[in-house]
Image (tube, rainbow, N blue to C red):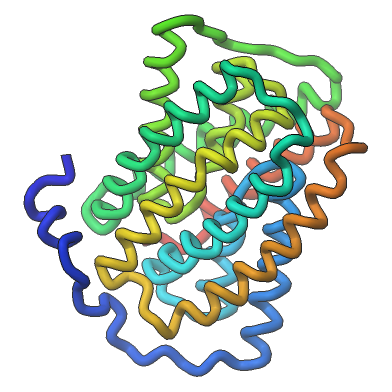
Length: 285
């Protein structure tokens, strides 16, 4: 589906899409990158989101990265974050065979979806996609806050058998394409889907989402790098934020054993609304 043009572009490294020289990393940039990494890592460890929607404005507004470059760097940082998040959260709640089947199907499909999203980032109609994602995040964020306050739970759909796995394939592909285009891990979109469309409890949904994000981010970062979207100079900030995110993951995951389910759901609802605000008000690709 990528087509012969995209395939030929991926076959060999391309000239840097950002030929302007990257400035040397300053102490101020290092402090900002470290603080942003720790905070988004805490979110990953606690509720299972990659935090990309919040790293991108830091990269663009505070560190001065072009938006397309920020998306590529964010994929690298996100990969650090979600990989350690899975390692830290795995085993804190048991995953059954159905959970592992969801992980396998959605993780595999996410590889192709992320590749298509990243390769087509500069050609796809981004504004309509942002609008759809914002509506989805707003509705689910408000609903999660309502459930958190009322201490109630709802599941919209819970298909079984072949229909369940077919639906998982379609949902994973759509989220992975959107994540690749927007340069995020997609946890804010994926966790509500796991909760309300597949009946997965919130802690397990966060762990599954992080695990599914690994192939999504790995494919996206690899292709963006091959297309020249992540120059060597930008990797300094990416590694610094990634290491800081790893520290944040350890802090966030330490709260899981004593976390209240409704508090977690309410926190995720707030995160979804903040992510919506960023997508609506942030810089456009």
